[in-house]
Image (cartoon, rainbow, N blue to C red):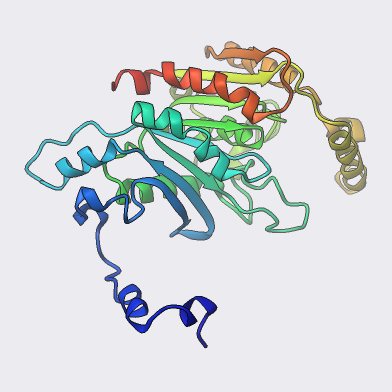
Amino acid sequence: MMTSHEKHTSPQERADISETPPTINPIDLPSKLLRAAYFVGKVPLKSLRSDPRISYAIDVPEQYCAIHDILQNPENDIPPRLPLVVNIHSTRRDAITCRDSLINFADKHGVAILAPLFPAGLDSLFDLDRSKLLRTDFLQADLRLLDMLNEVGHIWPGINTDPIILVGFSGGGQFVNRFMYWNPERVSAVAIAAPGQVTKLNPSEPWPKGTRDGDEVFPGEEVNVDVIQQIGEILLLVGEEDEMSDGQVELLQWLAKRKAKWKGETVEEKLGRTSRVQGVKSLQKDWRKHGMEARLEIVPAVGHSYQDLLPSLVAWLEECSAIVDRE
């Protein structure tokens, strides 16, 4: 049965689409056709080959075309590749905003922007947090991000996917916080903005509050503090007035009461902190105990708002050595 789109498409157009060779390599495209083929500029959401439940938005700046031209001739020396900023979405799954909000910065500095989109509702109607935890029975978000970087590196060999600049707001900040512990060699700089919960480098606290029992979540892997210390630049960013809303606190209390009986936990133990300022301060303090320095920026008169924190994030990116040293 024909789809509605096919009914309004001529037989010749359908043939042109269906007969496109699936093995065409984007590197074979003339650079003048990259934008027309949606390989430069704002690329439509792509599903991840290794897990089609996950997709990603990417913006590739015009500067990529010059690198593409050079890469088409194997006799040429490999040119410097474009830096890649990966912006992890919040609980709202606003991946398009994560990409589009950085396009002006990206176009100015010749930087690619990647924004993954992880699914929600995998195991229950209340499931919003699987990607933040990196690994669960239903989603291995950190491994899929690594797959995504491999895929991007194959499609756009002129983009540097190792290491990356990793940033995230709210739930995305939680992802960044944990990803840098288990994959520190893949990041050159990180920005963690307004996380609701933080994970400390504390082996006495259970995962995800600390790193105890991490070997059960990440079999065969371990947290290497020496490598984490080598991450060049770290930003902790939060609004001065960023606290959980009354509704969020009430929801946490309700969920805590539902879980307390069978988990053997008190409600007080389950609630955690409500101030995100307190959270990032405690994370900075914990890192100092492990020889790590992070820049902490508290933005005055700002609550839990990505748009209000965005100018500070962009200012930090414009000073980031992974970007500045290339220009």
